Structure formats: structure tokens, C-alpha cells
Image 1: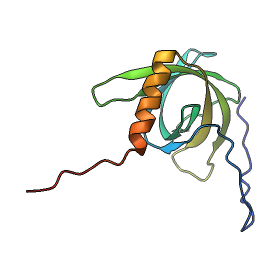
Image 2 (image 1 turned 60 degrees about the vertical axis):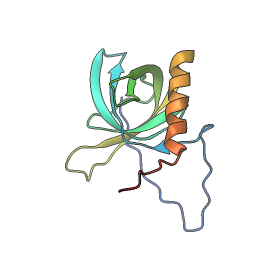
Image 3 (image 1 turned 135 degrees about the horizontal axis):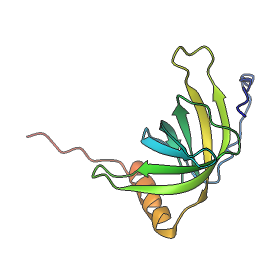
Length: 135
């Protein structure tokens, strides 16, 4: 069951603590989610990604604790990895005319090969890209 969450803005000067054990990277990837409890497929966009999970935007709400299979495209040549996960939070934006939901998924099952590919992809995100000099 989807539950609306109240958004609380911390007071000015309030310090927040990072809850993720791994560094997150802002990256927008079009991902496919398979809702294993329902057998339904939905597509969403990542807001950020880490080796331990992701934050997403979706047009449908996902239930807290729902078991998900995430397919992530990591390369421009169509390569992808599939990772098992669990919805850790999801909240809607009732003022949004588009019905956008934001949520988080913690990765719970990932093969050694997929983990290595994800780690390599994230490392490339933090490596500065050198632009070729124009002649």
C-alpha cells in the first residue's frame, strides 16, 4: 500500500547526515523496473545512483518494501545490468500536474560481474572528461 509522506524542511543551519554507505552520483538513466510482487513493468528515470542503490522518478507509486528487479543501461551500446532491490521510500508530489513520484531503491541482490560493471561505470562518472581541442 502506498503511503503519502509529509515533506519536512529542516531549519536553517540544521546539519543532515548521509545515510548511504557509498557515494552517490547525479545521473539520469532510463531504467526498467519489474515489480516482482505484481509482475508489472514500469519505466522510470534515475535522479542519482550509487553502488548500493538509486533514487528515481516515476509516474506510478511503488510500495514501501516492494521487491523490484532493476535493469540499468550502463553503456551507449545497449549494455545493461539487472539488479535485485527493495523500495525503501516513495512519496508523491500532489501538486505536480503530471503525477510524479520520487523514491529510493536499495540494491539487495547483484552478481559479482554486475557489481564490477556498476563500480566501473560510477568511477567513470567521477573522472573528468577532457574535451578535445578544436582546431
